[in-house]
Length: 396
Image 1 (spheres, rainbow, N blue to C red):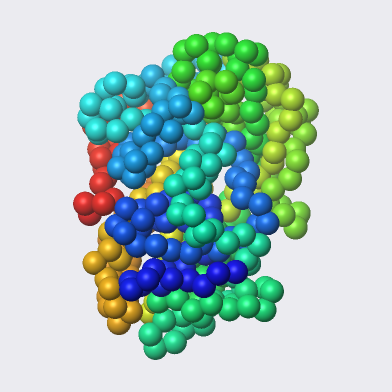
Image 2 (cartoon, one colour):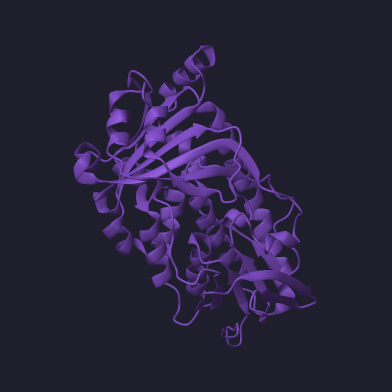
């Protein structure tokens, strides 16, 4: 394991090489700051399936010089459509495509997580990524931090950035809290696009909303695959891991009385993964001394606003901007406090929106559901998304 160092500048250590951590490396590199990234996995890989990159995140990645590699693997959906679970009736449609890019100066994209992860890893400076390095503890000193690893080694840094997910070892020094189970599980799978040509040839983000459940479908990987996400209520989660291999028969049975378009998508699946959905309550502070957190280590959120990865990317851009003028370790706490102040209110609003959508998307048929559907029909203008998609993490 090599030592952390930026030459004459700060020694910055990033714990975790997921999307948020690697974006932080790329953003700091843009400002001429070198980091070392410590990842517990022996091999760099990203599990999961697809994700939606809204303009508030795609704009960051474009400014980091990643527009062209993204263009080769991403899909630019024409719109988001929400439909009723049983009849397929259109409840609301928000234009994306050219209209979205004109309004927000960045596109709305759907991508495979592994493709985005690979693009970000390629942007890391040579020699900066250290695999098989599981950080177990962060010990603070007057002018920096010591990172301790599972193999008994340790490293010193002027700044440590915890990008190590919902089980973050870096967060452990900020709060003695625990993840909160949502009561919902999600099945995720990928289908070769030639089995679902309509979703390949007419790219949309399509959602069907129903009592206790919803299903999301959109193309990824240059439209060669179709990403499928299906949620189900589950009162308890007894497994040791939050991820497991799912049974396609179970998800098909749960949606057996849904619209034929939904059943067609689920029938095309060969296999699915199963995730239990957790989040945490917002932290009163993300920073202490020379340590801070971003992404799921700071604000793990439910996926019902499609903003988890987007907010991690925003965090990385804002943090790099706050740290970029700092050259002395003594100035680090002030810079991290500035990052904390900028980001907590923003992510708190998004976090609350995701929790709120957990209920809104899954209303039983009745008066509340009819009110929601009426609101969806009205809230189709892109202007309603200005607060979310129009955010500039570098400028703020």
